[in-house]
Length: 408
Ligand code: C2E
Ligand code: CA
Ligand code: CA
Image 1 (cartoon, rainbow, N blue to C red):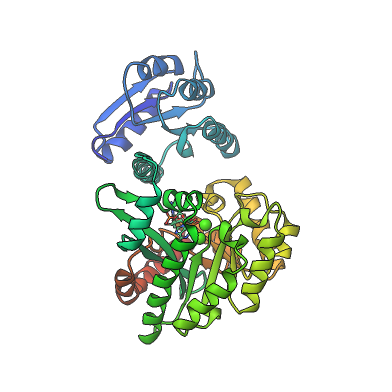
Image 2: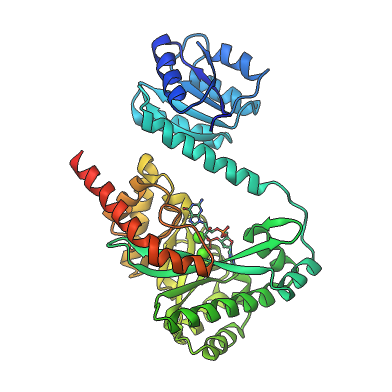
């Protein structure tokens, strides 16, 4: 974080100095300040900053106008909004800034606290990692994918799914990983999408499912029993032979279908869904569990949802991430959890990164959680180590955080 260059915009000298000293505590050394929006804008037009702290009420040009100009001229990506106004107003200006394309790493009531800055810096770091990953985008060809499968370059990582109550390891989700020999890490979103477009998704799915099942069989042999979640492309659901193919694959490894959760995205069940339902019904009849993935991002309505023979509902990261700080999002999350419960589905929250979000999920009685706060996706070997060594520490830490919270 040492190399960060920040700009603090506030008309009050006392407030500016307060934020400056917080930044210095975090070893940020490149700090500049401005007393109103216009002065800030003039600086931003000639110098590059990593982060700007914006007060809302200022003379000459206020924070709202500054935010809009920054977004329109693409002068900076990440901002923190500070104000002495009430939190819902600060938040709604944050939402406005995000819809203008800015990354709002924090919205706080003044005076800013050391932990506010820490959370914001953590979010800023996360955003930067994401950006780096999204950079290079040379289109993949059919040959690239065929050879990746043939040479076994594509593998699986596994991310734990834990019970909200007691953090018991309930299952793992298999996530595809491709480390290309010369291009490096390629995101699954990119190569799954390419496989769909190039007509290779069945081959890839069969290949990955085989790896997952072999691994699951190994875990079972070692007495490690949890369910395995596996992602299916919506395209696969139009394949009438899918249910039989998948059943044959699990039979080879003598894995009971009830130990497998097949995840399909919400979008696969919105729109024209009769073929999808036929395949899903067959899979369910054969004993597989079915999860609706990424729920909250698509357009499936409650009725469509009720017609799918699903067993599990996965709340998308966009509903979960930072929910504790966003009242509207909280309301949507709560009603979605209730819908899921009314439909008797197991409710899973994905993308849990913060303790405060976990607390809410606990309160809403979500069943399972998955997210970086507990564990990132990892190789099967690392997962074995994680189970033996780290899981107990995570439970302990959570308990400490809970105790601390209760004593405050
Ligand atoms: P998904 O099924 O929604 O998987 C969850 C994604 O969220 C994974 O990204 C996971 O690494 C990430 N994630 C988990 N916890 C957190 C968190 O706390 N914070 C953040 N920021 N991210 C978190 P990943 O592995 O990059 O996969 C992206 C998508 O690619 C998956 O989304 C899934 O749609 C697709 N995908 C991955 N593997 C497969 C596969 O084997 N088959 C198919 N058809 N699709 C796959
Ligand atoms: Ca998934
Ligand atoms: Ca998901």
